Amino acid sequence: DPLLMEERRDLTGLKIVEEWRESNLQIQSGLVPFAHEVDGSTHEMIGAYSTSSFGGTTNLGVITMQDEAKALASVGEMRTQTWMISLAFAFLALIFGAIAARSLTKPIITLSAAADRIASGDLTTRVKSRNITEIGVLGNTFDTMSDKLEEKIAQLARAAQENRELFVGTVKALAAAIDGKDKYTRGHSERVARISVAIGKQMGMGEEELETLRISALLHDVGKIAIDDSILKKPSALTAEEFEIMKTHPVKGYKIMSQIPAMKDFLPGMYMHHEMVDGKGYPQGLKGDQIPLQAKIVSVADTFDAMTIDRPYSKGMMLPEALGQIRELVGTRYDGSVVDALERGCEVGEIGRGVVQTMANSNIQSVNVGIAKNITLNSEEVMKIRDAQVQAQASDLESRKGAPQG
Image (cartoon, rainbow, N blue to C red; front, side, top):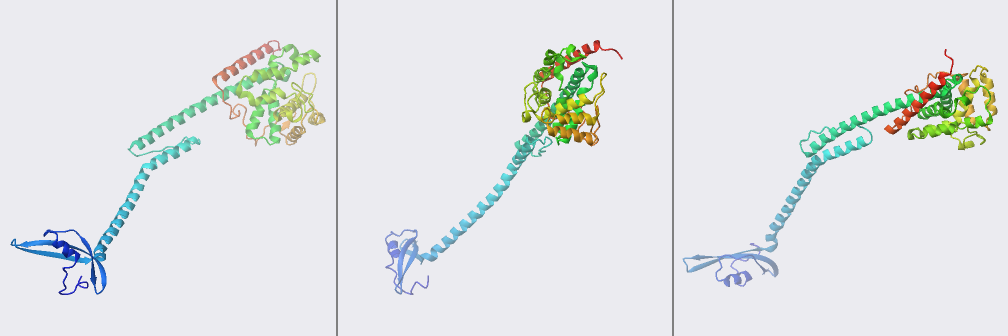
């Protein structure tokens, strides 16, 4: 550095020169740090030396020196550049890594989302992967599994529909067999079912509740299958002993139908429709809110049909008379809200004497197809229903043998 040197100055006292002399004419040295004073200022220097020989007799030493700060400045700059380049490569590696990771994880995320949709009930979900990797193969396997699952569920749905149709047919056969034991009450169960549904509509019941109510009403007298015909068809008043036997029909019906778990929602109407709100009914002597609404409705519908139907020995009551007598029993035998709903049904023409008018705006379909949606029967329950149907048909046939033809 010309600023640090003086022309023709003796530099033999510098540390680097001394090292060269002591080096035994070393051809080349490493870096040597030393201090150098110029005009009273001390400068940290760094230098190096090398030796050349001429003719084997003359040796020439070449010594270079530079301010240490300036010499190391380039090293610092190189270090900074190295860091910047390293950071740039690291950033690029992160970007390319993220892109690669996304390409790997996207199919997995798609599979996971599809699995969630299938779990929530959307069986039409498919992955449709075009990836030829293992993940793509997994996606195709997933679609195959979904196809088979959808097909299997469709088969189960068809089987459930067949069970429902069998159930409905059995219910109607049982109801017909019950009513057929007495030709004068034929159709009673169907009418009670329709009246019950009309009352339920007036009370704001939903479609599924109405279907449950309908089936329960159809089967409300199923226990009469087990009552002797001599009591059921007796033209005169029953004795006290016979009446006690007749009172067992709710319990007998409960014992028959409770063997089938799928029937549990229909049991209240058939088992408790002779309970009274004052607690004087049977078979349990329940009172007030202890009696399920289903049973309260079937009770009123049962009485209303019995009052208004024509019989050989008496003509059915007109609506005002029948409603008046039922109204008088509110608080003792019947629930007031149910009787109110019966009266509203009569006022709007949904309920008539001996018949229930067709409701054009009703969402409730025929009992043949309107069975409650949640009914599923296993093979054992199907066999029990078939046994009950055979018993009902045999009982109906037996009752018809003694009936006059035509």
